[in-house]
Length: 511
Image 1: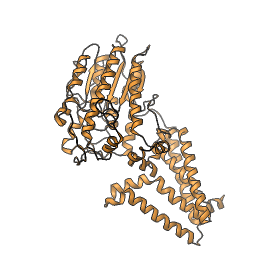
Image 2: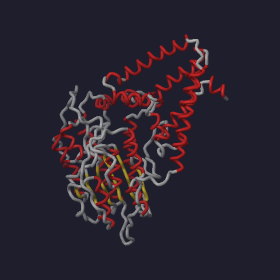
Image 3: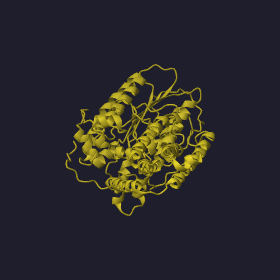
Image 4: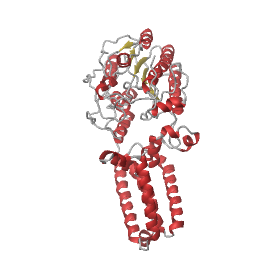
């Protein structure tokens, strides 16, 4: 055993094991243990192939193992290296993909030549790395065991204290969330776009319009985590730079949200047609070849980052869409269509218990894959917006008009199929592309309209924010006494906004 640890490059196997185990620890509770085996086997296979090729040329197992270790280390921890340089490097060129890949290639060549020529005994180096990764693995196993042994109720989970009196009717409740849909007032003020036709339709359908409504956060996951938990995210500070772990925390709070738990405790059936996982109700949209939870690990790798940064390139080709974890806009289009159809079909189904139906649609959120009449846009338009070659605003405004077609169809269908249902038509935030810092306040103005069969809208005030939406709804429907929170908007530092509008090759005027 001692000779095995001293003379064999066990770290070629231990590194992939540590990488996945460390990912499990970092995202404990979000990745199922069963889902990691295909990922682990694929990584071990890749490491084995690279080691085998290196062994043929370098002859000695430790030399081949050290070269494999260098390549695997760069591949697995590329995301961490990139993020570190982006935050701390005084020179921006150091975290460019071209520089990092060129540097990796140069050092790989130098290392290969050095290993090929050296005559030194590298057994102590092998021992060091073998023990190092064994210690890392043991440490993470202890942390992971502590998590699962101590796993109890999520602290962000619902309190379950709402009790609906038996005398009160429990209607179906539809939450129809249309992502990144600015309020009618904001569209008119900021972009001179007349969206009054949608307001007229909603009024005809009996809706109460909340024209001054705002979201509390300008990012989807933060907005929905706050809305569905009926509270602010107290760990989010104004101006805070949003990192990946913050988004994952939001995913946890959405999964274990207060609204769903309270309604479930009071006999409601939960129907999830959203883009988020809810506890016991996974997201229905189609996933890629790799389980979505393991992407929390793979997105930190070189391939994960390349697929994220250059998705616009890979999605063009059917072969890449099949073998790489990239998402084509056609797939997102199909997911939208599926969720819209599923919510409408749900409204027509017979049911014995009240239902909470959550539909979350990436409309009029990018990608803007249809024009105002619903005709599918060419790739040149969709990719042109993503690559900053086309002004996104005219495409967004056309997409708003297409979204209105689907909204009218959906709401009219629900009203016909389920006339006694409560319907919340909302958005998580407004239009956010290329917004100047001085105009960021307009991003918070969102769509908000409510249909109550009783017509009792007195508690819904015009300046309500999303954090008070369900507090007010439960007070109105179920005679609860939730205190309303201050209606504040929390501005954080999110990449993709706070920048000047660039010049575009094509800036057609919106109609």
